[in-house]
Length: 363
Image 1: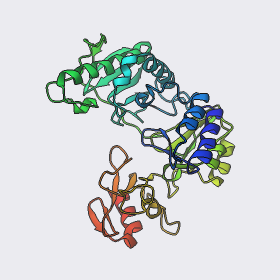
Image 2: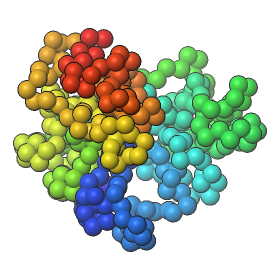
Image 3: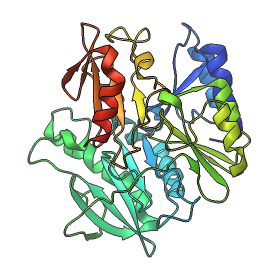
């Protein structure tokens, strides 16, 4: 987002919502607490700022790209360029509006930070100006310049396979056995990769990210309007699927001010890696105020001081586990009796901090 778009979201949250913005596990911005009847005003605000380029295609613009790409000298290509081109292709293809709102494009610059996020169509930069296109456990290698168009073609191949299957599949993994995305039929002619593997790497840590960029996390994935504005000035603000923000064009000397604004700027922060669903009172299905119960106790030891791996932890108010992380994570689930299950182990609410810390650091 541009600085102007960030200001627009902050204004919309204050005027029309609950004053906050949530960052989802796909890096989307989510306005909550919207008043009845504000839809037209909100749509006009977003459209005027360039945040709603197509009412017909908005729900299918699900593109996750390596958020630090082009900023820190890592990665084999700047996939932010792919993201913009793929988005343009999506918006200009009328048939693409038939994709499910759950269908996901993932663009990894080779560092492996987003490749494991469960994309239906995944592009990975492999160097030498080339890319790999991964769909349903198979992959082909092609020129990087052809990658965005090939990703869209693969999505068209999925729609064709879903129509043949007749099961209403929304995602590639939901296609029944015997049905798969035919890349050649979709118009993607490229060299098959014999044993495709997706790269695996960590997300950017909170702190300095390259000479002119910063990475911060939002506590429990929430940004107040004031915290949004604290990110500015910036050349660009990128929301991440780890409920954080990469600020491009920012002086590293701004980190203390961002921490003072309530953002997570250090990897050893007790808030780092802690997420939660909406919980009570925002969700009628929730059995607990999980956001209050997830708040770290500053008096207790921070996880990870022993040098062991620290897993993400997600607090869920019901068994749907909305917004949980991908990969390995510590599962904290509210129960009807007011207590919790920590990775399936019954845990009194009063013992939650110690149980969660142990579960995160003893894998």
